[in-house]
Length: 241
Image (cartoon, rainbow, N blue to C red; front, top):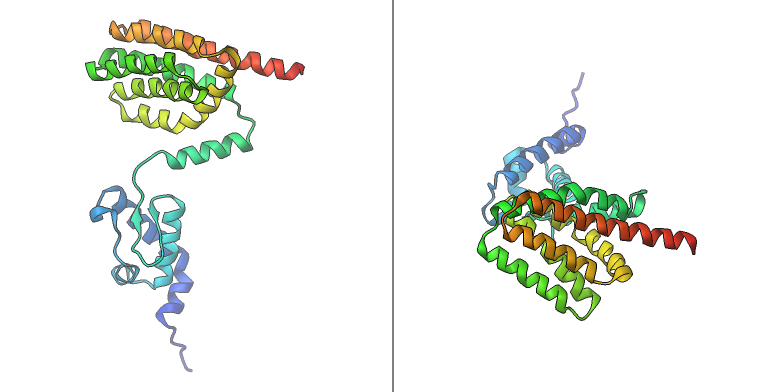
């Protein structure tokens, strides 16, 4: 009885899901370990030889890695590792806010413990250069002529504090939330003007300058709660209209 001899392509197609998963797992580990020089992956043909699979398996693995935002693909070039950043989280947060029942009030609840702790740690760890940048940020907020300039200065103040903690995850989280915070600022500054934000920033700055973590935490908590109260007032006003 004749035995059918199947080609490597046919065998790969039959085993494709498991092969693709194996390649994706291996490449992900190597990417996260920083193995690829200058962030460039080898050509797909070379990877196919290395993993002993067909090019179709490699192409599918590349697509999955791109969907995970670990690499970027472009015609005629080797795949490149995507630099570390908050873009993927930002996109997902924006989509989540649009498609769920989450609101800017929910964001305000998250900000309270997050930014209060950031302010406390910043007060304990801030250096003179970052402290000067905080002073400049407050001055820019006071002198800003347009609402967008005011929002930029406002966002910058909170980002400097996150950076001053020395904890990169706090900075990453603030960058990820930046666009949502910008939307919140547009509403609260539009409602009550810039003075409440300016008053809050000055209170936080005073505590940070004194290296008083407890006072910085309390000042930031009051600042964020004031923003939340403004949002609640705005929504109540809309509900009556």
